[in-house]
Image (cartoon, rainbow, N blue to C red; front, side, top):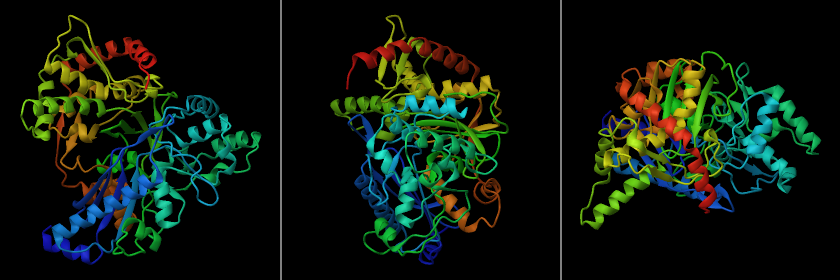
Length: 533
């Protein structure tokens, strides 16, 4: 689409805006009738560890949202010479799970507890036993029940519990709702009703009643909506939250807010049964849309849903590229010390491609990339740790390869339960996220880890902000089509991508590496014990 046509659509209010709160960046995408991103904005932010809790403040959230939108507005002005004032639809997405607790007056009762916290093991274990359904530590219900077990005073004053995207949506529209995919990271979903599981709600309410609480969970949590449903409109106050300049008009329809798992599925066209995707950035998760329920309950596997409510098995890892990026930063600093100004994209490319020259099992090197705990490997805390034996093949290729392996090791452990133990079928795995920006490298490593073909599409770098923009566009223009059909026919019909088959030697090498990784977990546990924050 040419610049003039884009300008006309934006002026006519035909643009769609998607905004996603990631772990380290808030990103906005503006999409037009061809479904392709036409403009973008971003805001860098970072969680903080305060009193043992990973959190962001409410000021962080609103400053970041306004800053991201301002950057989008600036990009639109620079590219098309027009001020962004109206839109056909808007969507909000964010990293899933966590705990935002409010009283009847809308006051935040305790600091936001993000997905990154691993402080709810007791609650998660007890709820998993009670429900016969895996409740991970990250889930909102685990945070709520842990607060009850801890007898935290704020619990008696609860009036609303939300995830980050549900909270932002509430303030922008006044509606306490969320998408079914996001809701599935708060509490188990009944696939027949695409709503919170009623039998499990009653079991939890009985626990709350025993402790003297008068609220019930259905009223405490946001109402569940499916993709395509209308979720409210942008209020005047909400418009000023986004655009303090006052240019953005109120009344824009919003789609149900969604978590980053759901927007990742949409952005990779992975909402159909037997499709899967892996998102690899600060955190990492792999998902497969199930054709039948799993035979067993696994504490390592989340059962969530697509934005349409279809069951999805997900292996979620708290840590992915943070340690890898830190090591690349060391090489960048070395270049600077040598008087060389290295292009950062080229630095990543050179180091990543060097990894392909390494031994399939990393030559005896070992790495744990744990900035925080990892429930899949039962680590409450983490310490980044690199280790080797004296006779290991310590060279640059193996060093970079082991850090790429480390980024996907916990994912492999979780996904092996699905692919090997359960025999879950996946026709192709779509990959997206920062790990796959260097062409072919992360893709090849992932194919080895999962022993399955991996596809990276040309749109893989667009991510969740594009995914939530598409969900907003689907609400506005879907015309009653099923989400998977609309995506196939309207968005991805001409999509291009490259598929890599797993290399048998790499598969054997990764399996050997994982065996060594798991057998040496005591080393990581000892590091946590000895190295105090």
